[in-house]
Amino acid sequence: MAAIDDLPPLREVIAAHGLAAKKSLGQNFLLDLNLTAKIARSAGDLAQADVLEVGPGPGGLTRGLLAEGARRVLAIEKDARCLPALEEIARAYPGRLQVIGGDALTVDPLEFLRPPVRVVANLPYNIGTELLVRWLTPAEWPPFWESLTLMFQKEVAERIVAQPGTRAYGRLAILAQWRAEARKVMTLPPEAFTPPPKISSAVVHLTARPAPLYPADPAVLSRVVKAAFGQRRKMLRAALKGLAPQIEAHLEQAGIRPTERAEEVSIERFAALARALSGAA
Ligand code: SAM
Image 1: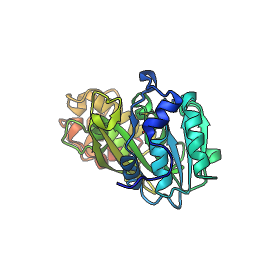
Image 2: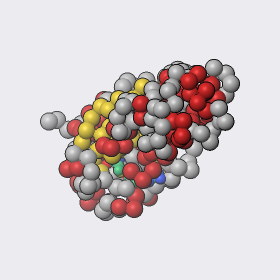
Image 3: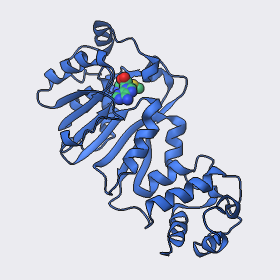
Image 4: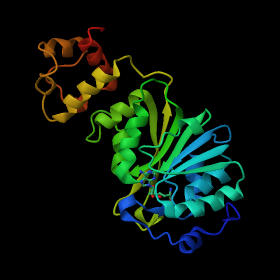
C-alpha cells in the first residue's frame, strides 16, 4: 500500500526519539499508518472541522488525521518525550497541527478550537471513560463537539453501544445513547498495537444529538440510573426505594412494572421515570 505521507515510518520515529512505551501512561501505539488513516476516515468529514486529539503519542493517528484532510488538529500529549516527534509532523503540515504538552484532564482546549469540532483519539485506557463521561455531561447541550471517535477496550465499547436486555446495558449505554448516536465502527486485535495490550480494542463513533432523545433533568436521570444499576439484580421497586416514598406509583406512571429489573428498561422509560420523579411527567 502507498505511504500516507513523506515522513519516516513510525518505528524509526520511535527509535530516533527513544519512545519506549510506558505502561503508566497507557502507551500502546498504533504503528500501521494505513490503519490510523482508516480510523480517521471513520470520523466523518474532517476537511470542515477542527479535530481534538488526546494522547497523540508518536503521532500515528495524528498523521492519519492530517493525511485524510483534517482542517486543523489540536493534540494534547502528557508525555514530553513525544513532543519533538510531533513537532516534526507539524512542520510537514504547516499551520494545521498545534501540539499542547499537558494533561488532557486539566487542559481546557476550547479556546484553541474553532467549531465544528470533532474529537478523535486512541485514548489511554486509564482516562478514557472519565473523558467520555465529561464530554457527555457538559453544563449545556449541545456540547462543543459534533462527534467523538474513540478507541476503548472492547468491553467498554460494548457497554457504550449496548441495548436493553443485555448484560452490557447499563449507565454508560444510557448516558451515551440518550445524548448521542453511538455505534461501534471497528474492532482491533491486540497485535494491532505496540506493545500489544492483553485485551482487544474497538473504535466507537458517537454523534451528538441536537437535543437528548427524551426530555429529562440530567441530574435526576443520572441519580435514577445510578441507583437502578447499582443493584442491577434487584427488582426496581427495591433498588429505587430510597429515591421517593411512593416509588411504585412513580414507576407505574413511567410505564415500568415495579418488579422489572434495570436491565430490561429502555432509555425512554428511564427518562419518563426521571420526569415522574421531578413532578414534570
Ligand atoms: N495516539 C497514539 C497512537 O494511536 O499510537 C498513542 C495512543 S496511547 C494508547 C495513549 C497516549 O495518551 C500516550 O501517548 C500517552 O502518553 C497519552 N496520555 C496518557 N495520559 C494522558 C493524559 N492525561 N493527557 C494527555 N495524554 C495522555
